[in-house]
Image 1 (spheres, one colour):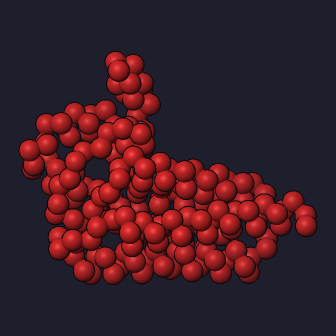
Image 2 (image 1 turned 30 degrees about the vertical axis):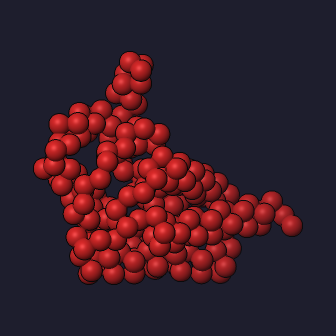
Length: 193
């Protein structure tokens, strides 16, 4: 088996691990409660299903991807998978997007780098597939999913900012980026501990 084929097979294997992890999280980890609008949940699930199915289809049928694109995709997949499971082990349990429930604020582990590491993990995986195969359908679902994650994050944060944990969360917001790390602030915050 040549190197390109092995690399592609490994990328697909990591992709399958991501899909299985996300499905596990959706079914067993994230609690969907009454505050989550049904239409939002269905639309999200359809967009994710489209990403998953199209990516699997393209892995099976598209052979003219560059080594660079495949390498970048694989790195994004690996970072996505590691970030997802790091966040799982750090958080223990969370509510699904658009929930009206305010739980405990987690600020350690990946939550010290991003306020929403799960969303970052998903964005990395979908971006990897989209960049690798450059399909208009993948681009459409990627844009929709990024918008969904952004709206979900803002709604979740709005609820927290109306709760008894508002002051603590405002401090957290000042030091930790929503989807992008604030390295300088993170270093300052962690050098005090």
